[in-house]
Length: 97
Image 1 (cartoon, rainbow, N blue to C red):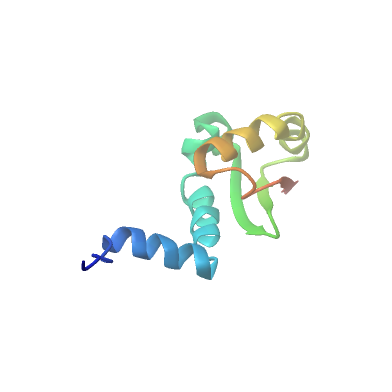
Image 2 (cartoon, rainbow, N blue to C red):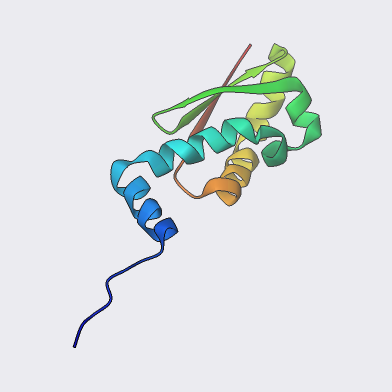
């Protein structure tokens, strides 16, 4: 009996991305690219994601006042990120201006 070992190209690519660690990088990039979808228009207007490094997201904000406000919302923003791209992609946020 011959066994068919073929698989759809998308599942093969998914496996390759996971094994190489590129799936994490793609999810990190999605956060940067889709920032407005993650946080909404109001926060998106006063903030800009700069980079993700070592599970920390660095966000540039317009002022010290907004930095303080977003620090209060940090937990909720982390939850939105987790809902959008998956858990443990970003575990901390640093706001700066």
